[in-house]
Image 1 (cartoon, rainbow, N blue to C red):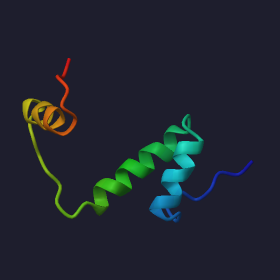
Image 2: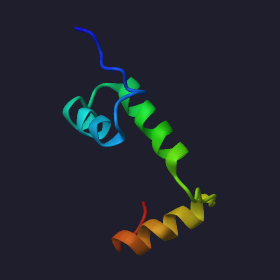
Image 3: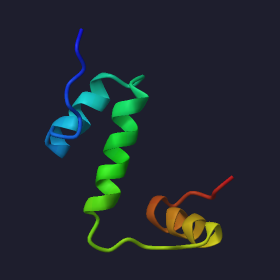
Image 4: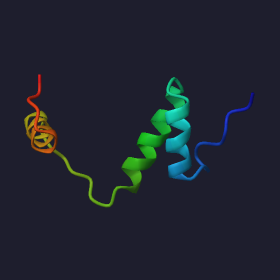
Length: 63
């Protein structure tokens, strides 16, 4: 079986592929790289800031 060309695949299609093939680490890493590259406003933050943001978004305490 030949793998799809993840670099040429539209991002939404790649996301669907990953959800259907959760063990395909290569596809997952390409998806994350492409999402980061497409982000218009990357945000740098410390671990503490990230934990606070997760708590704000999800209302849960980080472990």
